[in-house]
Length: 115
Image (tube, rainbow, N blue to C red):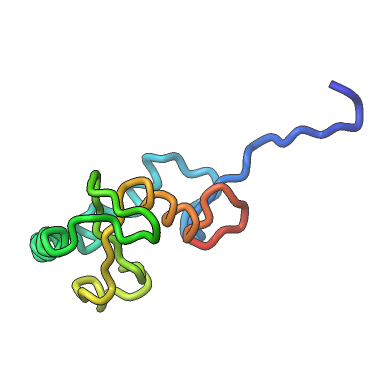
């Protein structure tokens, strides 16, 4: 290594603002709570199944996949808990489109991203 060239110590990582700086994955999961604690209960499971029956393909522009589908909240449950079971706040996304949306919306891979 040449002198005067600095190398980053840690790659930039998304961390929610409520999570301590050096939290492990286990600590993150514990602080986040279980799916049931976050509102994904039997009522949600019934609504999710209905939405998937009604709309059996990915709704992302240009996709249309029928595999590995998720029902996604357009406005997150954390920001609008009253819209948790609101059908107008739901869309169907395949796993790759859902992962891309999550990364984009939550700032994964960028320092200073939204949490």
